[in-house]
Length: 300
Image (cartoon, rainbow, N blue to C red):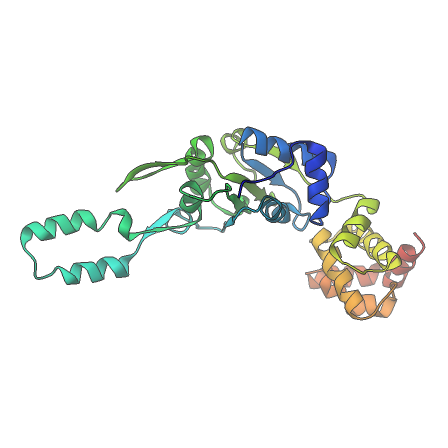
């Protein structure tokens, strides 16, 4: 079935909203350009502002497969691009152990053929045969090291990679690529030049309320507003890790599960672990005056 992606920025924003993702005009525009120009999109911002979720929603609304590469310190080609199936290679060797020397020479060549190649996310995205181009999510690229970042340059420039034993593999139809970064380190200019770029910040109070209502069906209007206001106030404090929109959503779901229709200081205190992930931050909020913060959120 052919894909039916929105043909304009406004239509794309509307489609995202229908999938419970509220993108502002800037984000909808850069995503639209990424699709039309077939260029990777680099999203930076604090954790929990919706960078990864955008890739998931894009795959969902276009009917495409989501291929996710989660980056981490020490990630290498074997985990990201391809590896060899050593168990199958060994089994193949054993079946030919009684063969001739000529068989052995041929076997050595065949051991590094496509039959024994295991595709990892990057190669899977390049060699895809999907009717609809998949969405390749390279998540938290800032966690990878400089060497892996440099390795990505060929892929993001020409959507091709070189496998020494096989040769160059190029995409016939480019996947849609979204990279995310929490900016734990600066990415190199060479990588940024190959991408469109957008910074996703924390939303305004009004937009965050809309997001909560879209992501938490059935949430009372009052609870959505007070929860968003409370989390917004937390971001103004000197915390080790300011809560993102994801934490606002998780916390609202927790409050709703407890039957809350508005904030209550005791319940807020008991559920702070849904919003704050460091013990020091929890204590800092309590020292600041939890009841006062709840009162301010209720009086917004």
